[in-house]
Amino acid sequence: MKKYLELINKSIGAALLISLGNFALLKLGNPIGPVIFSLGLLGVCYMGLNLFTGKCGFLFEDHIKIKDLLIILVVNLIFGYLFGLLYSITDKDIVTNAVSKVATWDISWAFFIKSVLCGIIMYIAVYMYKKGTPLGIIFGIPLFIFCGFQHCIANIITLGVAQTFDYSIFICILGNFIGSIFIWLISKNYNK
Image 1 (tube, one colour):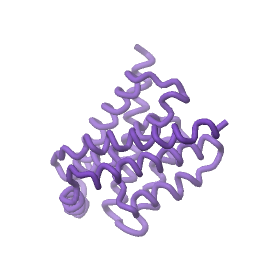
Image 2: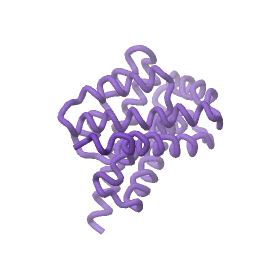
Image 3: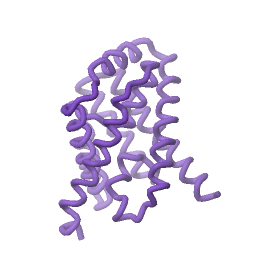
Image 4: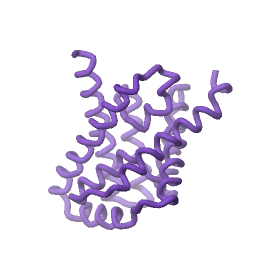
């Protein structure tokens, strides 16, 4: 029971840090918002928190149980959405920006590919952090945002801010997972 409480608490913490980064992104926009957003993943990594997109590529390498990964995902999604709802009452500008952003999402191959590409970047960013450098995070997070790639936890937070729901979140989750696993598979024999 204690193990699952820690898993849940660390997943709530990750959702909080990513939500703060997403708040900055929605408030400040380009070019500063994507750079500030990096603080969210830096905090997650340095504090040892549980972010689905930072864990799924390490499923086999770190011997993460599928059940634990699913708990991380569900907690990230629920609390990410709740933090987004909370932020929606603090600033009308971010609500407007979130609604505009959600309006561009759809269930399409393009959206799926953007989600896969984000998963690849997330794996690389966390992998580089594990190898001792934060540069993958510092450059990777702005890269995926500037390119319009889709991050499922950031997206659920945006949905909370917009006070809505969009089924594209499921495409995004799948794409992030596949992207992370794909880059792990093609690089696993070289990452010793």
